Image (tube, rainbow, N blue to C red):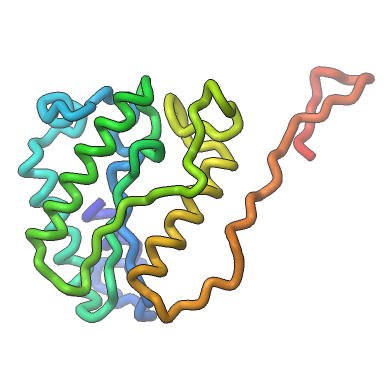
Length: 195
């Protein structure tokens, strides 16, 4: 992420970013441990990420330092998943455990960075993302979020941003995009189009 972030600032490493952002949002860990079954097991975390917990903390702080070097006065919001927005864990219990570990690590990194302009929030959708057994259109476990789940997470991010940027006006609730369903013609059932 440190390398990808610096590439996103400009077309080349030497070219300055033309605009000052209003806010940085850093969301790492919500889907980065896909299928890892990490839970609160730091050994599993280290096996999955290829680095130690200490290295994760150090790298996260290094990323914050890169952001600060580019834009010393722009607020930074570091978000972590709540127990139901951690994607791609095999069970709800493992989803909650891994989310707890990620929350702890991101919170420690933000605290250790010790910058009053860097904030920590947990994304807490309201209403919560449902268990896939209860609502198969709302899942966030075993796979990526659904459209419905994305809309709830977007709403949670809006709420987290409002705490850091209270002067920003929210003009409306997140609007979900329509779900595309394949439609097949009876003449050619093998050729389907998305409408």
